[in-house]
Length: 178
Ligand code: S3P
Image (cartoon, rainbow, N blue to C red):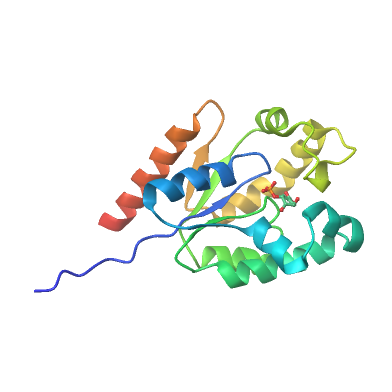
């Protein structure tokens, strides 16, 4: 009898800037031999310019339009999806995320994130701002939205990237076997 192959779960990574969505996504991609799509890169291709340029020339609202377009294109594909930190802001995006589990929230405290991304010029939301203060405001606003979409929450603080990867892989295996 032909062995049935179960559909493999394709994780979507969410969380605030600096929580490691892209770098953990890359490690997962190697381990699972599954392609990684970084949503910010898709947006840059769609716009033909960098993220700071999109914000500077067209504003955040336009960036969010492109983000929804990119998410709609890529969600549900056989890839690991690393999203941008603000992907949960729009209800339409949250609906898309919830319809395509598993969604994994890499949860980290603003203090942890501020240390990692201090001085990063590629993040317009932090430009000319106190990073810790801004990240604290974003955390307050977005934590409930991440929680609404997440099937798994991983606390990033004090955990090495490799350990996060192992935790995600164990979770995916469990999902396959239940
Ligand atoms: C944003 C996060 C960024 C990028 C854009 C907006 C946000 O992605 O999408 O600068 O609103 O938090 P990362 O989370 O990958 O830094």
